[in-house]
Image (cartoon, helix red, strand yellow):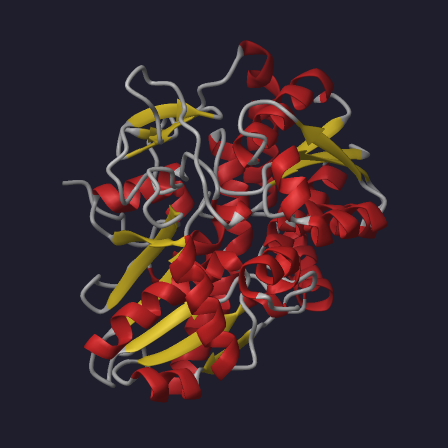
Length: 411
């Protein structure tokens, strides 16, 4: 069985064809995209080794993004549940309220280095779009955000922020009118405008270079966390579980990156997908439902599909997890059994959100509420020496309408 290559960055665990484990990823793209993808790949590989660029990135991460974010023990929740200690990496403290700001900032810097004045991106929950509009404004770039019509309706707070930042929202009415369709339309636009426009894919999906840039950007989360854990405990605990929600997979890969070389019996990686409404056949959980491999947005991955191999509709209360595919790197981690994947239903995520906000001073969005649901489920069964860390990667302000409708709760 292929294993993680020790000492090799997670994003570089592919072969010469950009395939992870020989099965996932690659660049399954039209001829018109090959040159811009190749150019971007060359530029990024140069920049990630450029000391001046790294210094610039770190400057903006500290002074614009607001790193490091807090690492805190959820004492009240831990005492209520009993069992394992529950901690949170509060990434929602970052500028804009979510982890998407790391990727957006790096893409804006790359756009400037490429000499382009226009930047486009996709969004589901609205956070990727909001952050890209923020970064575009910061660096003087013109910005378009592609967003499914369904998501525009259910994520109005972030849409308002995108417009306030001077970016244009392009509604997508095709297909399910959600994230998968927004990514498709954004890529189509880039094909016709790649000479003047840079594209930012909002998660670790798509052709290999976009997976790399996004995961490289969010790796800041784990760089901070590994230092914070060692400072708090003196060393990496003997039993620690890092739990993260998984849609496209960007926050999880950033959260896990620095821990990938540790033995899985010491550092367990748990990804929680969107199980959809209770008693419904619709969900957004390709990894935990044994979906088949297919091609989506230029990459081979586990993807939810029908008997004919067509992409199936998905459903989740969380727009950020409502995606039929998953990052090829997550497919790789599942296959080699380095990470474990499960799911939480809409109802479990809502219950977890209520429990966390009742006991603690953080208010996780519906995406990380899926991860908290798993932590709440397993903590009472574990001993107090076990450490659970949840990535609270987004705040609930964007979900105010959904929470008011479902829980009668104002944010």
